[in-house]
Length: 132
Image 1 (cartoon, rainbow, N blue to C red):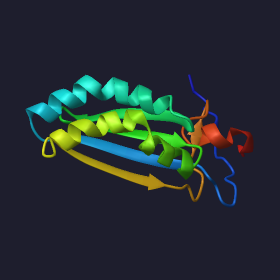
Image 2 (image 1 turned 180 degrees about the vertical axis):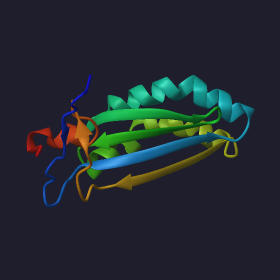
Image 3 (image 1 turned 180 degrees about the horizontal axis):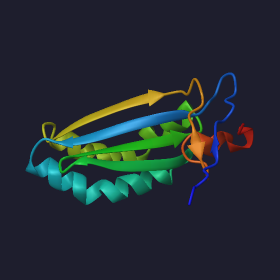
């Protein structure tokens, strides 16, 4: 039986406001390991419910590393999240235990469409009405 998938791309605006934020956590010691696993679901939830966040995807890279990809309506919404109470709470552990976690993050604005199948995910959540 052959499956047929609906593959599509989206038309991005000339200057899209949406941004993708990639955030990684790498536990460097026992304290970082336990903090990361104890707080991972809370971090995902606090991010996903923040104003301007449309979607969060989390992945396990290994026992001591996780990565989250979040999709934001704008750079301003992401900056507002950094100024908020949930982010302050996340950073408290880092301030008290500066060697326990390796943190990394990168922010991207899309320059062209990815490919999607079926329901919208990621950037297609913003621009699904512009599917081609």
